[in-house]
Image 1 (spheres, helix red, strand yellow):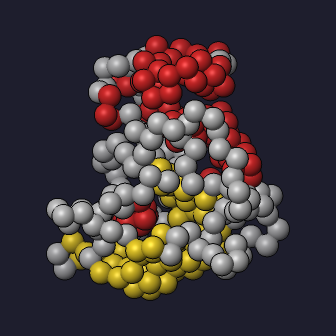
Image 2 (tube, one colour; image 1 turned 30 degrees about the vertical axis):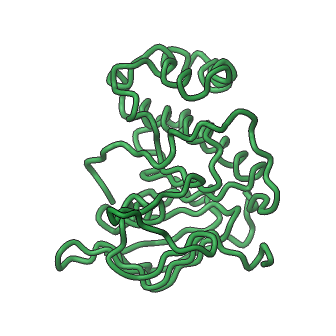
Amino acid sequence: MNDVKRLIFKVEGLKKSYGSIDALNIKKLDIHPGTIYAVVGPPGSGKTTLLDLLSGSKKPSSGSLIFENNPYQTNWLGKIIKHEEIFYNYGYEDFGSRLPIGTIINKLYGKKSNILMKRHFGRPRFKHLWNRSIASLTKGELHWVGMVLALESDPRVLLIDEYGTHLTNEMEQDFRSQLRRMNRTLGTTIIVSSPNESLVKNFASVIIFLDNGHISKIRSRSSRSNRPGKTGHRRRRKNSSNRRTRNHKPKQQDRG
């Protein structure tokens, strides 16, 4: 199938309900590969629910959700079998909150951890985080470390909930530039959610506006500063085979 017509996600009649309340009700949504999307809406609009469903973290109440021409499968317990090529937010929960960040990265990436330390933690602003435990990090620092793990996991699809929340301007600008590079060089499809349109309007190629669980409008930028990345053969990083960080996300109190 032609890359232009090929879809990474195809959504039809997707609904997620809690009792009599519909948290999400999307009639149709097509997500194209190699594109940066932003899902924008106020708290309670369904942003997190949409990303939960796309990642396979939650099962839809009804409707069709297709990932690369294949519907999501369930195991014998009725739970969604998650795709390894989809990374949803963070990935450090399995290691406990008392371990230093450097120790976690060493466990995940082995010899490659030295490269990661220089790449992300070499600057004075972030150097001190290497020896800090997860429990001691601020929300902004925790968010930034999680984003670093997402970048280094080299996924085909990267989903980031509450993008930019609690980050300093320096952290957000640094991460945004790395996401753009990831999209352009590897062709990664990126979907972020944010309550703040101004934070993503010059970053995302397509903005999906949610209101009370429904898509109110979709806006694409005709002249894009970040053109969609490659959708054919992708250059994979060496030694990025450890996938333990995939599809994990921290507990959140405020979910959109």
